[in-house]
Image (cartoon, rainbow, N blue to C red; front, top):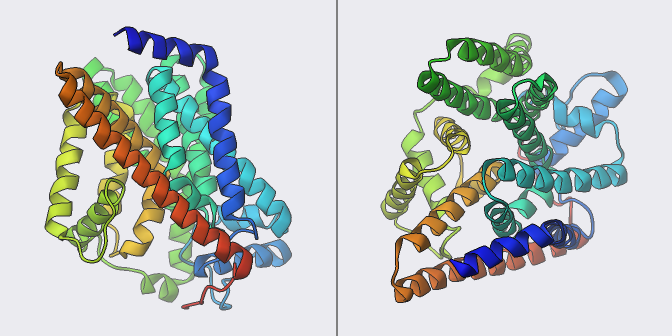
Length: 387
């Protein structure tokens, strides 16, 4: 207990110094990873081509000369404002800002030590650099997500601050226009508001938030409907019934999730991965934690699993924006596990396991960042176009 009080006191005293240290560390890793510039993949070429066509003709044209059908419009619009050098600087600003808002959002929910520790673990993991090392839409998406959530939670705490609700609505609407998966986040927020309304029997609040959430997703829905009407043949190419690949996706997601804890080499038993993932998710649900991050996590994951089949190689990218919330839940779970046992030996064993997971993630990050550094310097635009 004494050690815990002293630890909290140190964090209170050096909070922003520690936070600043994490930001500098993350910035240094990002710059090293992208020393030759952002890495391009097939998606990147389409983003950039659409941005150049929008810049000149105010239309979206993909890299192959076809219609820009499969992505929302915000990212190419943002790219159209910059050349590659200016975009790299803007990319860094969004990367650092996303870490800031992750911390501020976590601090709204829990004590500073939990928020700072969760951010620290995320900073040492591979996921922030998986998003930021490539010319992808995830970095801006993550910034819009957590800045939107920060102002959303700010309004929930102080309902007289209507400017927070307006600002959060704008940011979250832009998030949905950055990536279609933003709608999954809004579904999670809607579930949260429904739970709160049922608990408090506040139907006025539910009606108000339902209207707000409809307005948030309306631009994204309008974009997709318009694309389907204008380009039915191209749009139908991507059509596939929802949820038919649910269990295949669950297997793939479980393997990616398990790779956060242990190195997976060669074949892994999918059933074991699925069981472990479902077990941990169940523990999250029965934990005595805040409902908001849990509702976002569950809404995103469940709807993500209903999407058409995705490959293991791209799962980490799709999961990365909400991985800070996953790490927050893991941090709370670890704290609860340590507090439940009085035996010093058991606490030491749990601590060894946790430190081992952290060291593995540091090694995993170092390996991937080193590879991205080489690729960034020697062949940043060597991705093949598959369309």
